Image (cartoon, rainbow, N blue to C red; front, side):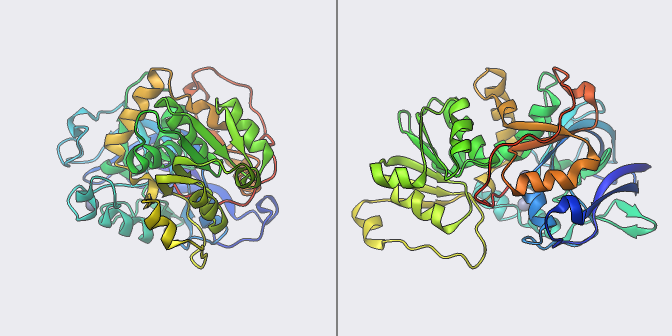
Length: 403
Ligand SMILES: [Zn+2]
Ligand SMILES: [Zn+2]
């Protein structure tokens, strides 16, 4: 079938992307879903740092590539065996045409060594497929003028429709709005997973989050939803103000944190740079855990005191992609939303059109937006909102989040 999507022609374009325009909206040919795959009509897609990192070249992926991986949609068709195959705990037999699904960027085969770690390590098969720009089963279903176009993280959601592997979606109940479902699949899975799966705070333990972009704010929301006192840290005052709007009662700049000597038993670093990691480490209390979920540059180096780790009995935890198992974690976050405890809509900065993606990449790179959502079906919105341009959120410290 013919679809319309936003294709990244080459990585590494010069900012501003509104001028260099690395993404172009075009018509593509989408193959029918193969065995174990399904066709999804996209309702909402979010713009994430993992899209930006392919655009700016900090993550090398095969191009041309149809970007987008944080999305929700409606199942339109199922390939052979899609109903009966698979080992996913949410039950493949419940997936049917008309279901709403959240896309996930981390498909799990359920059978490799990584999948046997309960989420601590990513799926080896899924990671290899993501790196190769294919679906989990190895196939490419996207073509343009007879040439293959790579999939982004097994999803490619900046388009009217997508064909994905069964393991790249998690069914959500119909009461979960499309916008919420989209955010659950990436920002919440990553930031929330760093709290839920990696930090595992005990009741009563304060949770400090260093770096308040989309993933950091999602960590904040999940920690608040679990009843923890949350401390927000960011170099940008506007982001601290946003955190206070979300319900955070204690906020600091890194300098203020240093001056006051405030420490917490759980500190999550979501900024993705070495200085933020050092800030997080210095602010971790005796016996505490420092969780790092940001993705710094490969050559970044931080200074740590091994003696302090020993003398203060401290732990450093690497949380790759929130140590998430999408089929296990998304229903849990959906339930927190349903109970009114996880208002993920607060991460939404603006609603945009597909042809505004280049400008949206600038807004994300400059820290002017947490989450910008492309709305393919306005009726997918619970409460229809006037179309608005990306909104200013203040300057950025150029953080690189994962997810
Ligand atoms: Zn696996
Ligand atoms: Zn993402």
